[in-house]
Amino acid sequence: MSVVAREPERGDWVPAPSGMQPAVCCDVIDLGLVKDERWNKTVHKVKFVWQLAVKREDGKRHMAINTYTVSLSPKAWLRKHLESWRGGPLTPEERQGFDLEILVGRNCILNIIHNPKIYDGEEVIFANVVGVNPLMKGMDRMAVEDYTRKADRVDEQTSFDTEAMDAEKEVQEHPEEENFDFGEMEF
Image 1 (cartoon, rainbow, N blue to C red):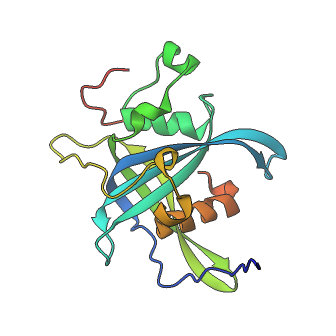
Image 2: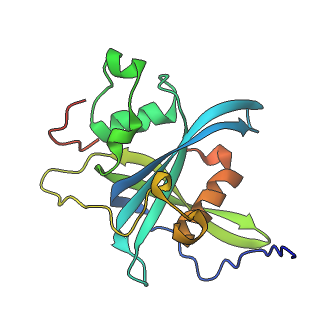
């Protein structure tokens, strides 16, 4: 039996819209140890997946993905985004160990910018998350729709949304672009 591999068609893929976008965190995926070509070392990475309030033409929500080094050092993007999302600094206890899983289902406002890149000779727009902010008072909260967390998937190839797979590939190909209304929640 032969195995045939093909290059996927990019189709009419549309990046998530730029600007401030209400979103809900629908997954936190532990990527484990990953080789970071930029710094020539192996680092622990985690991927956040958000659904935006705005929907695509097919009726599904746009998605945004960002990959972070698992670090809460003062210069780490993960720490900066967590503190911005929550609206305040992490406590000394939280800096010793913060369970990222509690963020699944939490709402925020993502700041997304479009960065054009040349991909296979064509200009492709990448939607990059550059900021994570709390919801403003009075904003409606969203729930996750039509998404199965990676840890809960039986057949990853058929259940994972194509747009999320494209975005995941983009993150892996561009590691240099790595880039909390928690309401009454206490942690």
